[in-house]
Length: 103
Image 1 (tube, rainbow, N blue to C red):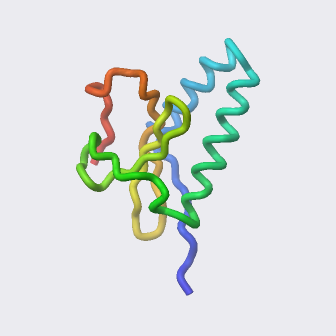
Image 2 (spheres, one colour):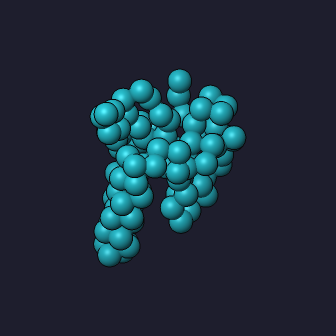
């Protein structure tokens, strides 16, 4: 029996989420709370369904990065042998040319 995958957030993804939630907390704390709950509920689904997110054809490395769409946000991740690594939490209203996923 294989071990369940675990979720690991990169430092960059954590900073992304913190920045968005901090911005929302100043303007609408209820909205910020709802976003956090929704993000973690959706990300937790990946443990049982790691391929739930579509392949992000617009992100490098091509064909390796997947993403979940949550409102105007995209949660980018890739699959490793023992984990799902969340690599970015991206506001899709930004200029996509500034998106950097990493290795």
